Image (tube, rainbow, N blue to C red):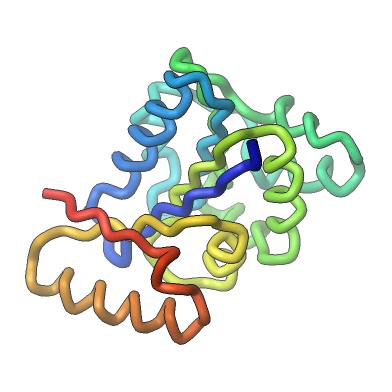
Length: 180
């Protein structure tokens, strides 16, 4: 099976994207798939780890130098923390001040290597557009856009979809998840 990357994005905070990401990754892992859950939400550092009741010692920012040096994609396994449901978890950073070290250039090799190790890569992609987010979306097979049923969210989703289309992401790649 070819690896699939699913980016979960919400264009405002509090819509439940972390909840969706954790539950999707857990369901896939419990069904026997090799799953990597990556937290690239720089506004909610540690939220996903707390939700999973995990205390990671390493983050993606620590792994980047190793990825450049090693041809072996399984080097990723040294940096992840495993959850008892079977998924592997990797936060992008352990401290907010490390966020600047994650760039579009250094995240691409990570995704290429991770795709050789995992069936699914589930990414909590945060809630703001950035060059790093666009790199995540470029690698993704599907974008799950989590929204809430309120009037401001509807307008923001419309803007978000128009922006994604202007960046040449096909509409068939985007799925809306209405969360109450």
